[in-house]
Image (cartoon, rainbow, N blue to C red; front, side):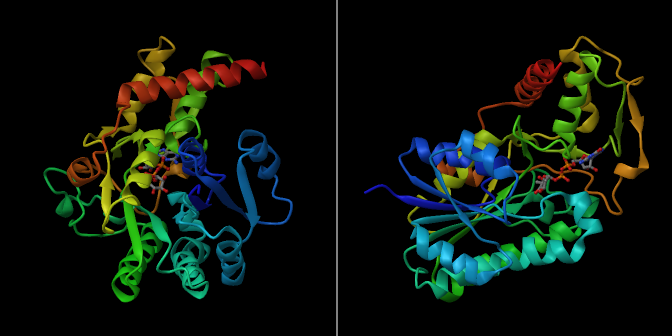
Length: 329
Ligand code: F7E
């Protein structure tokens, strides 16, 4: 019989990649969609006719119980969150409720449905829990035993979710794991995140549809991989004999300036300084300066390794945006 998976956050970047992957693997895929007449529904159904959507909300545990009882999943992937770090500073309580307490709500929904022994649970944890401060930067990158020091309401809420998963594993013997994923990008990324904001602006500048690009801190460094590679790692975590937490990362770090260099290079511009405007509106009250992950445990135990490298990622994103923005003209 086909395995069943339930995905929260199915309309997001990772949800789309994961839904495709699980469908290819023969799963029956269920996804949570939030809100009455969600405008994302039509577009989503056109691309993912094989996903059975269930109307529910992470903030309403009874609706999540219903979703679990309707789908009877073997695997649950909790990808839903208020996920934009900058936005979380402006909406800290909402972020705490959705990104933090939402994890408890779905774990409780699984327990209340009596499914805690049969369901395998994946939590989308994040490198934002490490914080990147100078005192706390392991030489080989952050791994599963590194110290946490979140620097945003988002990071704090994710840390609550992380520990909730560990606690439910230890308390109820649940197969529940944290995937501690470093930044992962691609053409499905929203334009509010810096990589897609850049690739999209570069394409529009090339096509004459945009003049400049307003950005905040250009010196921040991130360990950027391709989201399509990372969902494979999520799935592998749930296929292990015993539950454990894993870092997924590339083991390389690059600055926003590096991303700009490669992206503008794709359109034949070697000096982008006249296009980029420094804008304090995009700076954050506290910044995560540098993130570098150490994926050794995932490589060894899951046999996982990123396939797409940094230059290939930037190229893929700019090419995609050139094609969709070109089609709009
Ligand atoms: O910012 C800087 C910004 O918003 C990256 C989420 O998926 O990954 C993501 O969080 C860096 C930061 O991603 C702009 O200050 C400069 O230093 O693309 P981002 P993020 O904050 O790293 C982690 C792993 C998650 O878990 C999150 O959910 O870029 N930056 N100028 C800018 N960032 C944005 N968004 N916009 C700018 O104009």
